[in-house]
Length: 459
Image (tube, rainbow, N blue to C red):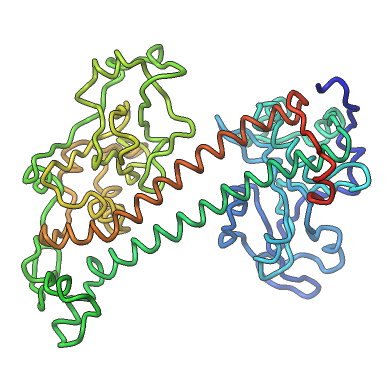
């Protein structure tokens, strides 16, 4: 257990630590370009997205003291918010640094820690900091300063005592948790690829109208004959601009009614109280659970089956679309087979496309188009916090091809979407496993047998 492990103050494990430097926005004599990683970049950078990391110019005379190397740890020291305290950490890897076109450092309101590898395994120290953050212990070192949450690093470094098991076990813990992280990231990338493939079809057929343009110009569409025949060979004017001949310039409400569906508001607060939520029961989809056109179950709320049955008109069916009713109103989630029977939660709107609707994924991609998202935001009610209602959603403009074409699109793209859903479920299971193992491994409640074989696997 943790009691048989020596504990060492964090500051005693470090070779060096430096505050970040925001640098200058434009080049000057004696300054060199660097990528500067901010606390707000941590989530994206952790998943390999470095596009948002800005370029700044740092003093050539001092930059060598702040240049990041593999196994450095970044610690966010400002910028927390309610429900998300500051004190997040990020492990710098060789893969991350190689993905950047410039040397890297951290921005102001962040600090980098360089662990002495002769005293502790750096990756183990990183996971211990992750454990402190996940368990809420970082909040003890957060204060409000001029309206901004600040992390008291100096006090933290003096008081933080890190239990150090044998080096072999440090390597084993870092290896196990890092392997789970790598698998999560691999699945995310696979899902991004599958999503991109589906979007290529959607954009080519229903945004750029490539098959229609090809036929109008007498060119080969590149599609099998049975698919090419489903596209018209000319365009016509409409209220929504030029669209393929025979397609409908319509609104969401009319199409839902045509297909036997409806648009309705989720249960009101008077129907579902805070006291109704339980640890194990029927999941309830809230606005926070709507991510990238899908539903995340990582922090989903639940109610008893009796409450779900009481609110049966709000139970979800495959092919439904759930919208956030207030705040980030452009966000929605397409309901799949996994979410069938779950409950549409308070703060949401339910779009039931209807049994005759030929392709739910087409509807989801259409509603996710930048033009459609912008339309929803523009027409939302409320200056302080945007709000949606059923009337606004019913008026969302859409261009609708023939049902036969949509069914063909669905047969091609739905298998890709199914693989994404399966990948999401595996990611959620891996995240749950990682987050369950983290405190048990760090505390010593769970020990790793044969840990010696992991020596050298984690720096």
